[in-house]
Image (cartoon, rainbow, N blue to C red; front, side):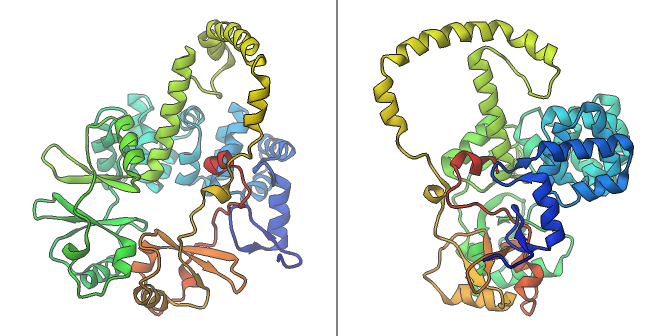
Length: 436
């Protein structure tokens, strides 16, 4: 039950203070999970007035994905000003969620130094997507403002062909030599604070940096420290050549239900990884392109100027209208059969969800959790995060396994868990689940 004066954040399981809950209720339509039109108007008015405090108060409670939606709903002229007014909220997560056309226009309007600061906050693949569409002069201006290490990584990625695995991959991964034990790996992760913070598996490599196999973090957490990594690693892995087309990469992820995959150069050396969150965007892009091509509309974007969209599509819209009228007359003769088919309930989250997950009480420490996982052999074998729940089994937050592996045993789970999480109601339609 919700306690009086508190409300659940639609993106989180932890009750919010009443003031924050009230501000969220004014900004989001709870049923549609979209920004309210009157909220967008209030933000636009405050932006045009240059009232930074008012804009910040309105936008600060929003999730990065909702801030991205806000940019897309504002007029093109207001977007750069909004970015300047909420500069410390303009993290890489917001830019990564933006529509490509809107992001391109916004980046072109921002100073090179600001774009460089934003790119340095992002994963390599997201930073490449941000910079690659800029003109050559603008690219060089942004790269000149970046730290040498970040600049070198992005320049290396830009050297690969467009829409290739090399452009898509991230260089933030964990690769360790084959002689390590489970305990040696855990010690290495805890002793090196500069390693990437979030990862789903560890790559095992030979002396030439060729990938030999992978270890899922759930296996590592449940295996005694003395066991060699080569005894628990999975040797059968999907290897992605660096020059492979992104559509082929997406097909492999779909076919083999991958969470991440190693990317290798022509000599077979491990140079990066591609994760499923990158592939979701590619699948959406490729599906949209295929639909547009099938309709004869070509490439397009809802945020492009109306005149450009009209010119490219008007002929095919007329053709589609004619075929739709013909199709409607045919469908009318089968109305009864179609109504019968549509009578079945639509797919919901309850149909899609898995009941194989790990949930633990909030009083546990990291050490308690690791002991619990190792002592209970009947738990699910593969998982990527642990849910922390209260005595009523309400989710309070999540702990990624990469965090658990790098945290001392004595630390409480509530001190490392992520409280900001997306909650899916069991009755939610599967399309809405996919959008979230």
